[in-house]
Length: 208
Image: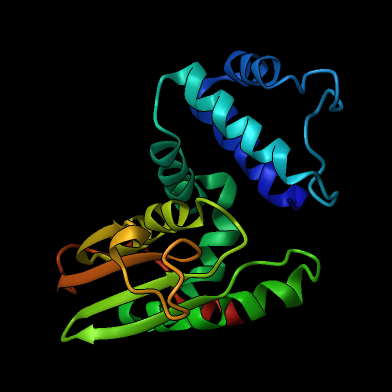
């Protein structure tokens, strides 16, 4: 797994639950003496098992399901001041929340331009009915669907949109390849595109 992902997970756990909790997670995962004192290095590549061990240890330490932690991570990536650059990158996807949703088709390509070895799974958005969408997260990063659920909820708030989102259990979804285990699907229903004031973001100013 790319160090950027592991570093984001580390920063989320430290900011949300404290450095002592992070140290406990490392100890439980058996990684305390296998990492530098500062933890993960953003530009290194790590064994995928380390990421899974960190998530499992975090769930045990905090007594929370991993899916819930991953969703909170997604929210953190958009709402934390530390991650303002990522929030701006996502807002460049469009003026409206619907524009942003359609821009997710291009997120893998944009990520590859910025970090060529990130190897982000394909995201595919489709309109399923009026004001209803489905986001398909391709295989490669287990749990990405739950992270994206948090990202989408935070972005809906950022745009001032009232939306209902659900992570669809792959066992109950028809995946494009017919394989029910390799894809994660998020359903999105936009109820009110102007539910509340959006967070300030001036696309024209940001481009200057």
